[in-house]
View 1 (cartoon, rainbow, N blue to C red):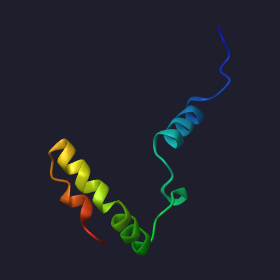
View 2: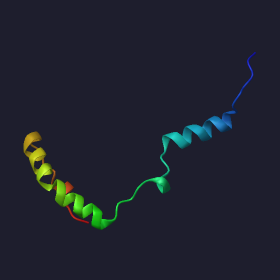
View 3: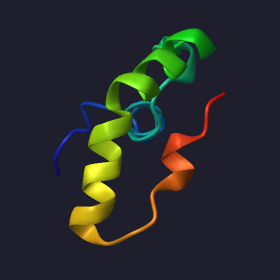
View 4: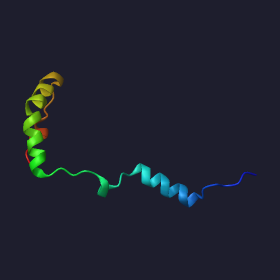
Length: 63
């Protein structure tokens, strides 16, 4: 028989940690930054709309 190096409980914790990103560690852009980025990419979004022939207006909503 082989010996377990890592317990099942520890394996479970490791899997959970990698499957679900830690929301507290994620960068959260301010509303101001989100709106600035929206303005910056607005024309690109409109071009993509035409290219893929889909409505992406929900991407253009300011916060």
